Length: 364
Image (cartoon, helix red, strand yellow):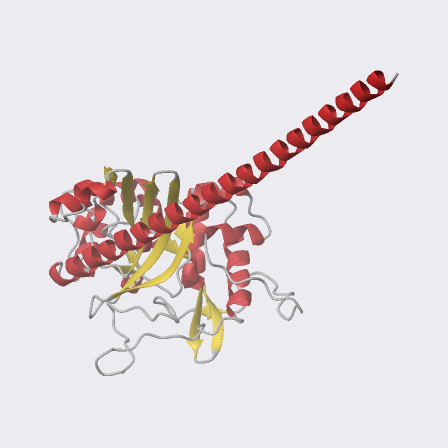
């Protein structure tokens, strides 16, 4: 009997020891796993931070390109410029090696790609609202009609142009920069010339109204609409659908200030919309002619428009330009496991050619 009791106690002790060892192994394994996860997280944060710094460096390089081209292009922005050449997926070490960087091989696992887009090649929805009278936001009938023609060209209900303009104005009333106008950086005087578009005012034309055929019943609504910051903001306008937004995206943008359309880069649909009486086929002929010889001034544009066969067209030349101040920079950086896709809006001053970042958005 004592031997059996002793053997039973010894078996229980062995089982208890095994349980303790197993529990300790589980705890240690859990600690090691959590430590590994934490190390991995720190590595990912480091890689992401490095990718973001590479993206910032590439953006600075892009701003240098825009500024240098502005210094040499005599105030003309066209599709054949250096800015219009996209960068294919390229190793960062290839760029660094070309400039003689001694640590160029450290970028062998980093890839850079991107492109620059002329933001003024699209119809700017900010043009729908202007300041015909100081301190008052009004709708620009000429621009509303142009947007209406663009919607119709794309197979969208043209009446949404008026609704969009009212929604935009209601949102702008909460903006601190809604009455902003450009000034000469050398003299401080306000710029009002055919080649300089008022940043907070109208883009040509003097016909304004608060209610262009649409009752503004929500004028004093207690909750103001959110200010439009991009094409996706049109989803807040009653009547627009995601499918319509997808159709509009290549032709419409929202910039901080009113701008003219660059006729050297605008697609045929936008040109047909801003020129009253011009059909899409005439606009396409204008674009085909532009591919051989770009426009050097608005006078060249007027001659080309009439050269399409539409001799009786009447349009406001202030809606058109051959230079661009706003550019969209699309960049992608792949750094080992980290990826950064970012779109940045760059403003280039028309006089000094200095650039500044307006906003930057990461693409998900």
